[in-house]
Length: 77
Image (tube, rainbow, N blue to C red; front, side, top):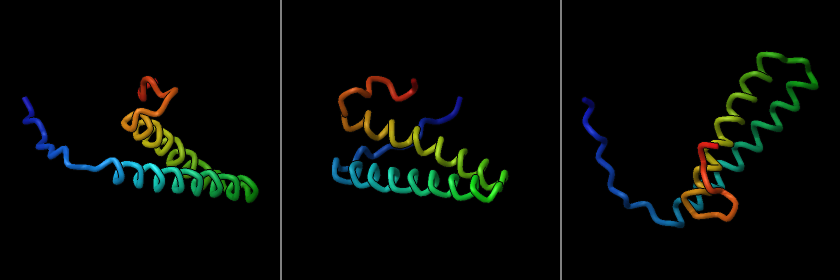
């Protein structure tokens, strides 16, 4: 059985909120890149942008859940 990771639990709410802001910004950048690739018919770029945008949606939802944002009851759904 794998050893559990060591967790310090020392992140502040401010650090989590900053990470949420950074993740949201990065997610929006990937969406803009997807749109630019779509305009140029760049299928590979669209795939990469969509994959990264979708991943960051999960990050954003999880951070919002961590902060207790209303309407985010389960970050896995």
